[in-house]
Image (cartoon, rainbow, N blue to C red; front, side, top):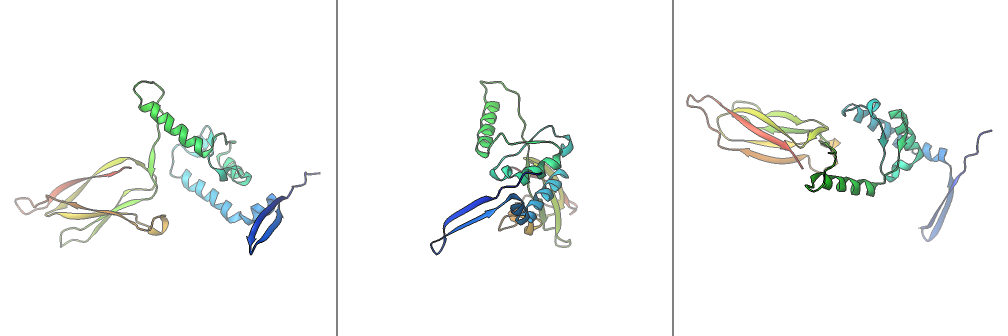
Length: 210
């Protein structure tokens, strides 16, 4: 005989019009109501695994941080995806404090510790659009792909006879949590044609940093 699942009592005082609310719900009912949200966890895990290194199967240990990760249904899905038990020994405040402390020790000249490397990334793709000479069309190029390592610099080569403008932006504004897709506009100056009026090669350094 299986163990009977106990229902949790929910009480909210003065919920509406000075009336209290009281109800009961067990874990199965809760997970059924949250089914669509829980599915997004697996979708995010699969999406992340396609873009990170090492892959999920190659990781030695999994530590999950945050209050929501304590929900059994969340822990279960993460554990199943990585095919190993997950650890919840660190809360969000401790994660920030320990990370800052460790980084300070690494930067300190008075102490010697093993360097702990943290690679930041570009969360959303960044593209450049620029105006060519009048006889050519506008150019667009994705400079930093999603989850590209940051900070990171690239040298791009352009052909031109005169100064031109470039605009950095997020290519798909519907998938970013920002009200504005445009990042900034930049002017590349001191560009002129060669003596034979041919185009000059212009090298532009672009950098994704903090």
